[in-house]
Amino acid sequence: MGNTWPAGQASRWKRWKLHLYPKATSSRHRGFILDFYGFKPFRPHGRPVLTEEIARPVRSQIRPKVIFWRCVDVLIRKKIEVPGYFPLADQILSAIKTHTQPLAATIGGTLDTATRAVLDDRLTQEPLAGPTVPGKTSAYKLTLMKKLSQSTKPAKVKQRVADLDLVRGLYHQLSPALQAVALKPGGIQYYAHSVIQSEIFQLMRRDDPDRYLHLLALIAHPYYRLQDNLVDVLLASLRSFQNGAIREHKEQCYAHREQRNESLKALLGGLERGLVW
Image 1 (cartoon, rainbow, N blue to C red):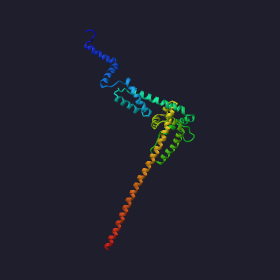
Image 2: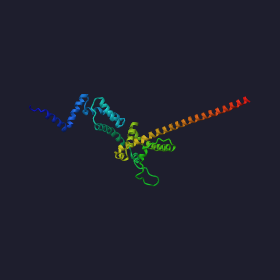
Image 3: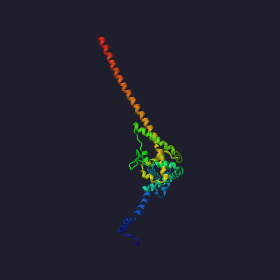
Image 4: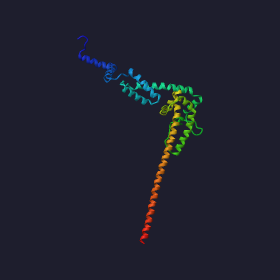
């Protein structure tokens, strides 16, 4: 018999091995499955393949969620094992951090004291009417910039025009820093949405250059959005006025037609009575 195990003992040892060494056994089985389907393991083949695939959309400031699913598609297309969530998320976040660091460094070397004060002012609470000190219920100035109404009422439109005047002044005051960073529209939208979806305390916890980068994007983003919004309101108002004018014209045409028919009926009635007499 030598070192051979009896059949019952061998099967029992296999069960014990599965219980005692599940990771080793699952890793061995995963290798068999990958070989069977012609896939390569994620390590070491996956990360080099995804490096450039992640770098391109990160430079274009595409959302991390979209980049994640692109990575999954690339791995499947190249027949490489798709890992769990955390390896892909760590690689994407590392690429985003690597891309953001030069921008933050540019911000840190470009902003002067006055510009920093303008940006920090967005993180203060809006003063209440009168001499009252802002309290816990006072809105932050940054929060007021997140809201954008779609109403076409004159009062709401007037308020948005006033907001545009305010944002225009901030935009022109911060334009040197924006030109130095040279963010594309997609980048401005990406960083602005990051601020819109976060709380004030989360933004204040960021390092100074990173926080100023997000604040710059949040000021540039509503400057463009408000212009687009007011143009849309103008087009909607003109379209509504045009539809109203067409509707009123049709109603007047119908009224004139009825009046003309009544006049013709009266004329024909008078002619008939004249012929009978």
